[in-house]
Length: 359
Image (cartoon, rainbow, N blue to C red; front, side, top):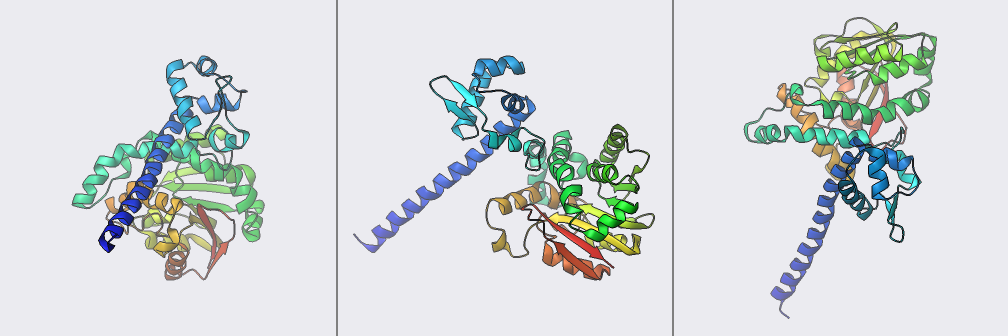
């Protein structure tokens, strides 16, 4: 066998190996879409609430078509999301899969699946931005993105924010317990601020966001939660200044999205009282590309193209991207904004870093 023949043979094997990997990755897209359908149709919840079921039984209790349900169950079983007993033709959702697919928990993915589906609506505009520059404006994103994102981040806000993150910052915890004046910049639909208001009722809270639809939803949520007496939400571009002075200012996965991150950080510093604390949650990524290798890094960069990067560029902004406000950059930009101390609080979260920042 000649050297050329060995090279050809090795290359063919490498191609086949990589084709197998791409097949697996493509299948992951399909199973994510199927998982989203299961969430939307209530199939996961019904499976979590029942013993082993047939397709006929699941269809009957969810008001869906048996033939479609049978195909969906087969897809989920083929991917290992469900167990299948051939002798009884019954499907089971394993107990360890319930918190991820069908329960209110810190690791629930149903909202993320909905949000990712919502991003498909802007693919054409993103492709055009590749060709012409610019980006996709916030107004182009539909309800599946916004609602799905709220549902996904609810896992952290409902189960980690006041139970794990705040207690990890004793001075912040003490201020909240005494009744702090708190501003949440980029508050979205208000879930984090409402959670803080419930846990620390002595405080006063205001949320700011540039997205009017999110502010309207946040106001409705505050009324429903019974905290509207101490929580208000306002449409505000923090880059133009943050009205008022605060003991605590928070941002949750916001800075990397902004058109003017440096300007907003300076506005946050100005809005803080001298003994105030800036609590910043942002993406757990590195400024070194090789450190972001793997499934989570690939997800971060993809969401960046479809939302974080493109919405910033649509405003002629900095375009940091999802991985752009990593620890290295956070320390650099906070120093430039005039902050004195940036402390990374260890929370062991694969998605996020938590920083406690002071003057």
